[in-house]
Image 1 (cartoon, rainbow, N blue to C red):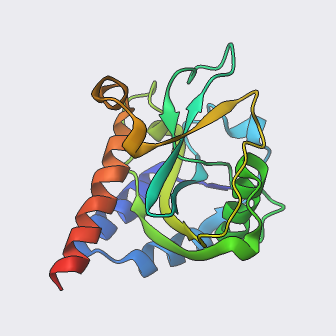
Image 2: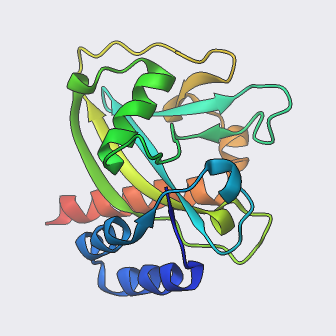
Length: 193
């Protein structure tokens, strides 16, 4: 699924960032989403694909995927589990459940909570993924008895943020750094309240 007018989405994101209106942003997205083939959207500069980036918290740890597939432009990079919101997903939450099952074998009943944290700012750099994708940041907390396994071992390896070296972290893409910082800021604000 996608949003048609990149400039309007940029304005909606700016308004969201100024007012912290998460509900308003989600309402805008859900009210304006359209269906189209992913191949038609991949490099379409007038549309934005909607991608939930899923910060999975398991036993207090942030789970990341290290991309390992040969020929993949993201090989060697770390990423949240993520995926395209497709026409078969009625809601963004359906998409999140689908991606967690496809990538990590996580049953939907093992999800304790799913919280929308915000959107990754759009980029004006045509070589940036944030030029073509509207990245929506979610934190999904799993029940402690959840069994996680790598359902796509040819594509990625499972890692945890606490296991990474400074060298690994220095190679993070800007969108991942932004997402982790946004989550950290919100968590600190909740602690202060």
